[in-house]
Structures are given as C-alpha cells and as structure tokens.
Image 1 (cartoon, one colour):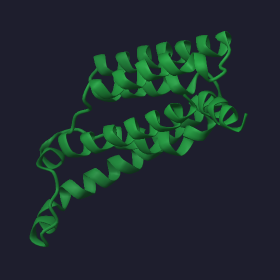
Image 2 (cartoon, helix red, strand yellow):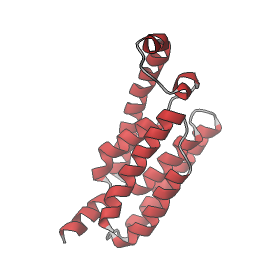
Image 3 (tube, one colour):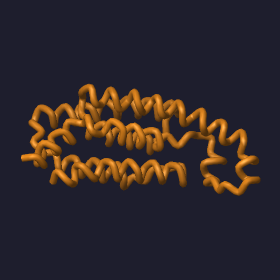
Image 4 (spheres, one colour):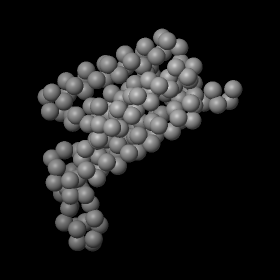
Amino acid sequence: MSTAVLLVLPIALVLAALTDFLEMKIPNAIPVLMIVSFLFAAPFTGLSLAEFGWNLAAAAIVFFACFALFAINVMGGGDAKLLTATALWFGFNHALFEFLVVTAFFGGILTIFIILLRANWEKFAIIGVPLPRALMSANKVPYGIAIGAAGLMTYPQAPIVVAAIKGLGA
C-alpha cells in the first residue's frame, strides 16, 4: 500500500499537467482517481483518525475557496477539482500551506510565460516549434501545470507520504 501512496499522486499530477497543457482541460477521472486512492490507502498508511479528518477538512476548505473562485470566473473547474483532490492528500497543516504558496508562485510564472508565448506565437511557428492549438487560442492559463509542479515539489512533506515512507522502513 505504501508503494501505491508513493506513486498515485505524482502520476496523477503529471497526467493532469500534461492534459491541461495539451488540451486545456483536466479530465474528471484524474481527481476522482486521486480521491478514491487516498480514501482507500489512508487507513493502511498509519494516519490517525484525527489526521484523516484534517485531510478531509483541508479538501473541503480548498473546495469551497476554489468553488467561489470558479463562480466568479477566476478559476477553471478542472483546476478547482485538481486542487481539492491534491489538498486531500496534503491535509490541513504546513504541507498544504507550502503546496498552495508554491502553486501560486508557479502559477504566476506560468501566466507570464503564457502571455509572452502568445504574444510571440508567430516566431515559434516560423522556426517550426509545434505548440498545442488549444494553448495558443484559449483565453485562459493551463494552471494544472503549476498545480502539478507544485504538488511534485512539496509532495514529500504530505503526512500520508511521510507515513508511507515510515511504513516501508518498518
């Protein structure tokens, strides 16, 4: 079970980032897989019931914040679902805060990069660099890339991952 914990979240985050880059959407199956995997694996990793509850609380808080941003058209639905599912894995602690701060930082850099890329689209087309049409024509930023990168960077601090690593050593 520890191996599943160590593989599911990183693989899901990479898939989400790739599909968001290529198609400007995050398939529902990815956050669903993340949520189901967490709910199945958490009891076997040594997380206490209180820690499990805090993970659920973190996901609920992130969901409501993201839903509010989605409602005012600031955030995409796929990004909101991915952030919620990832928050479930991090729990309500310093690891979640680090994940959200790194996500915001990477998101800012990504947004500037996308703006510059779109402004210089013709230069890339001339030299033959193929870029996804959805990326260049959409009026939004594939924030799943920032979420995925931040999740991979801060993943080792997630309590379920720490518990899984301890379980491997036991």
